Length: 417
Image (tube, helix red, strand yellow):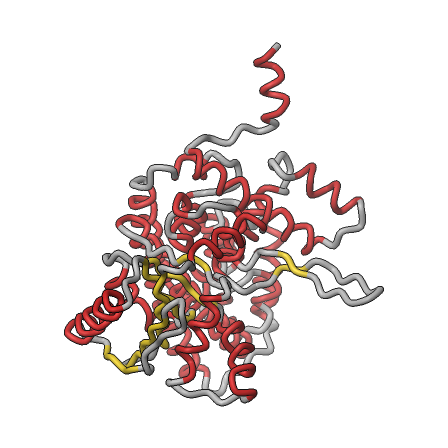
């Protein structure tokens, strides 16, 4: 933590021009401030190439007038609205930094002792946060990494849509065949096939037990035996599902199944493209060398981080992910360490599921995980600790472009011997 603060202080010096941007969907507000607190009144500019060029020319004139050498431009985390201006500025000789909205909110109340929020006040507050050193470097993904970020986000949105449709489908199936969900989950391959071709209890009974058994055994590849099929068939004969208005429900279930299948094909195509672009990342083999981390996880992490090699310390990437630790202590009270969660939630999600893979039997983190559990650490807290440990390893491997070696200390001892 000490090294990252030192880096932040060095960023702002007596030759640095601080530029703050209050990002909006259509209108941005810019603000310039010199180290001697000479500034300009916050001014608007728009999301267009011509307006961006006017903003840049105004910045250059102000910089030359005050004979400044460096430019630091900062803005809040504002989702997609900041992307066009960030893409424009990354090609300029400036340093881009990002400010946490939580910081600006708190400092804003100190400015004028008022929570007043205006487009003219916000840029000044952002400049205050940057000058204090409470900002993080913005890494704008380029090339294959940029493609991975877009593909990862598209996959997340597609999975959210699929989950919503699966939930709707289960609700509808429950109305016409409530017993099905207790025997075969509708979201499984076998359940989806039955809902598509034999969506209600009557259609299942009509094909007979032998045909039903052959279908289920084939689709499940032998996973569901005769006992499960008998249970399903008997439940269909005694089902308490509704009959009135059933045709309309069947129409909707057919539509949902079709959309879910389309979404599945779309997700598969996205994952195929992710693997293609992942191969173009020079250090991707380093991350994939960790047992338990697959192509999709590696692609998602690189897409969200942008480029691991552009971060100098592990503290920076931990903050980017919201995995940095904090505690609330006062007097004799000693608070517990918790993660801040002030960062990219998708990184935490990917690392959490990767942690689950690494703590399974014969996983690389199994022993460490079991040790924490034996010491009384709750499972979720232990998995978060494993996530942080994994992220440290990933950062080191990407930085050094090396492959993971399990039990590397004993491995080095054997080599020395």
